[in-house]
Image (cartoon, rainbow, N blue to C red; front, side, top):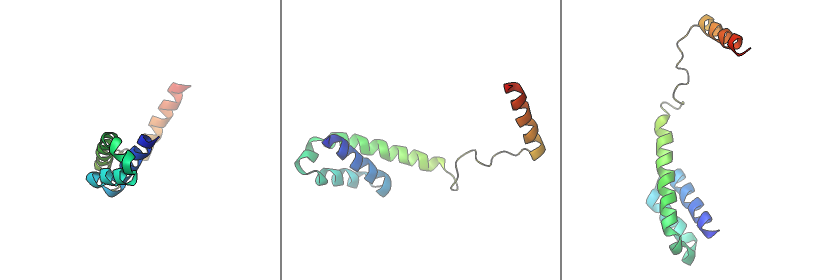
Length: 90
């Protein structure tokens, strides 16, 4: 149970603060003597959370997800494609 709490604290702090070393230290200090025992797990959780957070934030360009608004079709062409899909699914 202590390991899960420590990993959660470390991962949450790493994502919110964007400071992985501080997140490991914070999680370790908050759990006193149990923190030293689970420090390797906290390090792994913080690294995974930090990399995942960096990956997600780099995928978003200009505040929107990739592919959103990328369609350059005319409304008439889009409605034809929708009708084709509906006919093929029935």
